[in-house]
Image (cartoon, rainbow, N blue to C red; front, top):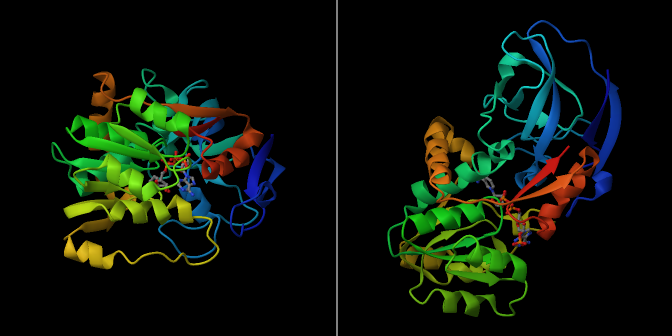
Length: 336
Ligand SMILES: NC(=O)c1ccc[n+]([C@@H]2O[C@H](COP(=O)([O-])OP(=O)(O)OC[C@H]3O[C@@H](n4cnc5c(N)ncnc54)[C@H](OP(=O)(O)O)[C@@H]3O)[C@@H](O)[C@H]2O)c1
């Protein structure tokens, strides 16, 4: 069977271009006993994938040049030689091997996928109840340790992780300030997601002043999704015994030079601030706890979500690049 796959054509310097990807046709072998043929329905595109386009050691190996890109995905079974799986079943890759290649047909062992719950919208497995939601939950609750009445600032607030962080912080009784790019996004945060204040960093000439005005009692928790100048401005307002879950640095992912900025250490030292980086894989043994808590809030109507769903397998690279210009509201998904 002939299928299409999208491979990494070259390692980008700075912001990736569409020419860093290539679509090619390959032939899949016949299914063996115990295997299934998957047809992807939805793919997740995520900022961390930019790091995998670079060479070098990190917490996850780089993509290989000329090999398919891979990401989180939901698929349907097209053919099955596994007695537990039938054509039409909707599945996600098992957590031991959680990513699927960007390909229009994929062969996996049946034991390497698990069926999704038909009562949960399938895309939630890639967002709210998947990696981004868990990142928000564990980063905020385990590192941030929010207390009633505290002020929580979250950058990248209108994205897949940020909108969940803000809502969980509200559930903990905190005052929540979100930072995002554009008037429409900040309106969404206050109107739909119950943020107390939202700051448009793109439309605001003085982000430091805006943060100080939005946080008259200082900042107790800064959930950092972006890094760069936004984070420098928030850290200026951090309180004694503040906590900074260091989740992402998307403002720097396409930097070609080592970024230079103010040194935070004196502020962290004199205000006894905890700064802790984390990757969500650290919490793998607690994922069921996180999913249970998030699903409970969803069922109780306490946690809402939004997704930007772009269409077409060929559109995957463009959707990934769209994360770096903020084209998404909430989770960016590609419907195949
Ligand atoms: N530690 C972990 O395990 C873990 C897990 C998941 C995600 N993350 C990190 O968490 C962050 C958010 O991830 P996500 O999945 O929720 O992505 P996302 O927010 O859904 O998408 C990326 C968003 O980043 C913003 N952005 C892009 N370039 C920016 C820049 N130069 N300065 C400021 N904002 C910029 C854009 O929103 P605007 O329109 O607001 O600019 C864009 O919509 C990323 O840094 C990601 O790498 C970490």
